[in-house]
Every structure is written in structure tokens, then in C-alpha cells.
Amino acid sequence: MSVIYLLISISIVVAVGFLLAFIKAVKSGQYDDDYTPSVRMLFDDELKKTKTKTKIK
Image (cartoon, rainbow, N blue to C red; front, side, top):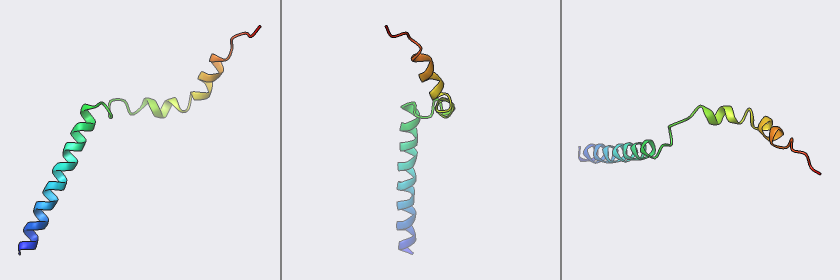
């Protein structure tokens, strides 16, 4: 029976650790914009082409 108490207490500590890590990630802005990076990789080649249109003398 004491093993069950030990496992429950360890699982609560692990869950609190994951909760704190999630809160820290949200506060640091990691989840602010999750749409733009996926779209940016589709248009990356077009941005490079527009930047290289300058004339070289």
C-alpha cells in the first residue's frame, strides 16, 4: 500500500513540473504565432528572388 502512495506523490511532482514548464513556455512567447512559420517556408524562395533583382554594374 505504501508503494501506491509513493507512485501517486511522484506522479504529482512530475505533473507539477510539466505544468511549470508549460507556463514558462507560454510566458516566454513560444506559442504566440504558430501559423506564420509554416507558411513562411512555402514562400521562402519567392522572397529570395525579389531581393536579388538589383542591378550589378
